View 1 (cartoon, rainbow, N blue to C red):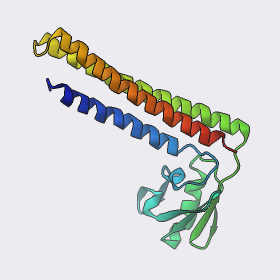
View 2: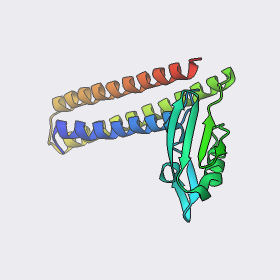
View 3: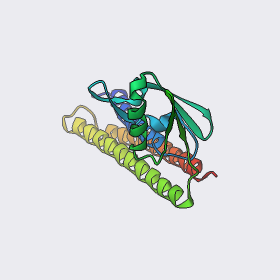
View 4: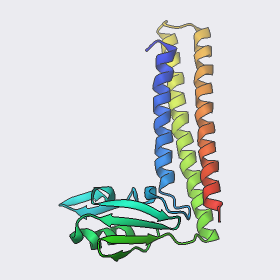
Length: 187
């Protein structure tokens, strides 16, 4: 991999992984509006194991403060209802036949602040991951120099390219955090 483009592609792929992980963590933070992503982490005890909610039901958002879960197997309605209640999301579902209604309660100011702090922690973890990828890229370029595959000037150029890539991903993380913060703070 003594080619700068190959190295940058590898680093970009790994940094993109940190971003997608951040998106997944942000989707679990409740912002006061209904979203099917809110229930992505819910796992249901069914068919001899724990399965994702989406494998036993369909999730819809008929209005901004309500999620409906249509359970396919009538025998699993109570199990799904308990799984949603016990998922630690602060939700209180109620069932009506094979359908479960999940109202999204209004967020208190204290809860908004907690969510904003959690979002900031997730963003900082993503930045640490991106910086770790940068450090790995810098180490690889220095390793190529030690092997005599590239010159010292090349290492400087590669380092600048790696830093530019890193700065771009850090900015994306900051932008995602600002967007999530705005989403959380909205009344």
